[in-house]
Length: 213
Image 1 (cartoon, rainbow, N blue to C red):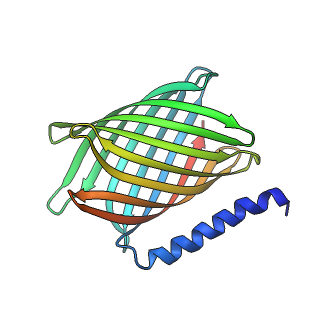
Image 2 (cartoon, rainbow, N blue to C red):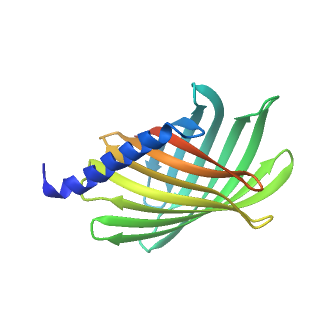
Image 3 (cartoon, one colour):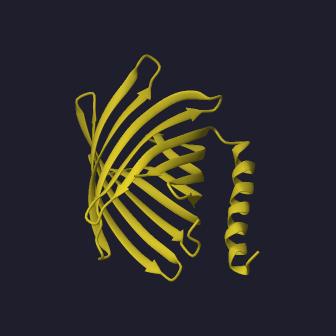
């Protein structure tokens, strides 16, 4: 094994060990699955996926479908637009959410690493009410190997209606780039503010499969 691969594998193994150890005492554990497609041109990237979320015991509770149109640029800044349609299970009904989105990206290459800062503005329409949310995701990707691309990211969510910080999600994962598809495997930890002074923790095991068109 090349020496350059050892630090990356060590970080992944360490994270998995900590994740499994923490999971035993976690209040919640979920599995997320994503399947979608990506088409690229010189001036436009079209991305689509459908995702399903399961709680402990394989209880299915959430589905969303997302469309994104991103406009790539050779400069460090680029932007995009998107839309997400979401169904969430509540005790007496399934709630529908309509969510138009705006994206602003900052990308910078640092040797074999790529730094990305994604700023997302969401207009969440729930039961006829508009909730404005800002999400900021910072991600580092190790790009030395074309077929195996590990990454780590952290993201916080902030409600603009009442200026409230409500969620922090940290993920470590690896993308496997195949000829016609990309497979994604990731582990995550998320803190949610469900009540004014009540923060809950969940741990996540996720998979994704994106086909290249």
